[in-house]
Image 1 (cartoon, rainbow, N blue to C red):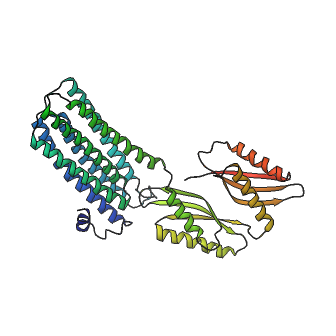
Image 2 (cartoon, helix red, strand yellow):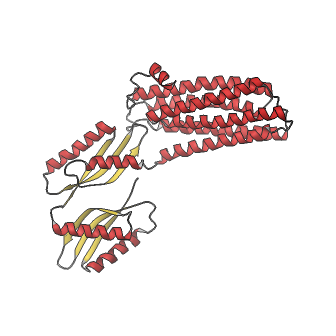
Image 3 (tube, rainbow, N blue to C red):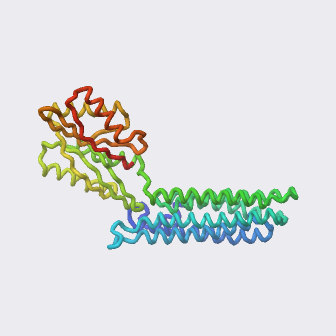
Length: 388
């Protein structure tokens, strides 16, 4: 069904990097969600009135809220597709994340309203009437929501859409919520025990938990999650694959929305090659990464000495000393300034964010180890922090 809808409503569906294609995917997902949720809300509301079940009626209102969420998602996809302008030079891609956060807010509101209704139903119980039609409506609803969740997951993965993944989580949560409502109806057929209000509390818990997960994922992106390790390695390996590149560090990736990533990096190049040739290599890397990965990257060129045995030996010695202190540490931008009474070793250390030692402690440990090798060694160390 998913492939059929994609073929019917999306032209050039494989070209997901194109803004108009992404918008078409978002429109298809949102429109499908709006139509399906409105139908489910109408049928469930009727079922709730017939059975007198608060959990069924609340589930109907939840579907109505989901239709509103789909409208918000559609607005987010449409607005995020706007091109960059003077006030927003990086585009409007983060509006897609903001719309996902708005979906989370709607889910939270629905959860709290259901929580209040369920408490009221516990304190003022009303008998629940068993009805086969009501049960069938709920079973069909579970199937429809399960399909909608899978549908949004497929589309969301194709275009890396946060709102669609949020709708997917909400849909799967709704399957559990509707299942609990169906349980209330089934229990009413075999017992006079009224558990409807208590089951409503469980449904509210599912909904609130879903809202929490959606907001956590979305806020993480807005605040600046680290990029995927695989994505970082892909970029670094790509840079390292070019002639004359002997090292890469200080890779920073900024996320301004799906298909709107910008990056910067430092590439180490032998200092003995022609400056024009080195510049040409850097230009080629930046252009190829843009064409192949859709990533606008700016690469700073760091010249390093590679044809001096003395400097190479000192670099390796320093790297080994740093690794002895902590395997997670690494050095770059290594330089040496020789003097009559001492030798300055100048380098940067890349420090993970979760490292337990302070900068001063790390530098002191390095100096202590190097002085044991040769008391004439002095260091000038800059501490860098990893951004991934």
